Image 1 (tube, helix red, strand yellow):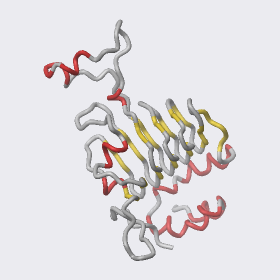
Image 2: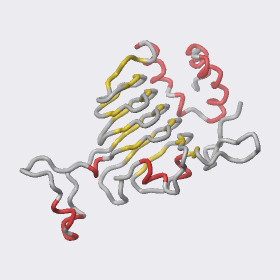
Image 3: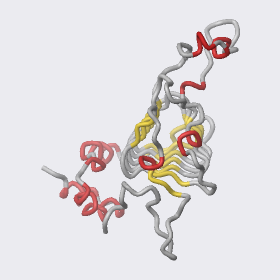
Length: 213
């Protein structure tokens, strides 16, 4: 079965032949200097916005000193928000009030938190999840509906709740190690298409047999 076309803004075709406007390939829907988005990563929303960048990351302003990095083959559900580092206030003083943002001469240089937020490859972020500044989500992780995520999430972990905590891992340690070594998300497009049955059935041996030399 062929892979979806990563160059299409709306990759899902409805039974009537029309495109599903509520699902977009993010690399085609977002043109923003502070986003870095891998191919095949998509987002869905019941009320698709005009501006997907500000919808998903409302505090990530062009020219801010951090990036939102999203890997390949990620799946982002309705209501997910990334609260990026520019939203943070300084906490070292006696007040958290951001006085410099109201002074044009100081505003450009005032950003107390500049950490990037990084989402790995093949990450599923569920309905209404909130990803906080500087979060690092490992490859293959699942973020449950409504979870509030901060800090580092291990590869292939399942995170739920507020505050988000690891409930379990999707696979055994040895399976995770094998998958991280394979890095199938970087394979050539035709090889990933060939590997689709192995990916869907969980046949790691088959997947390894298809790995490029």
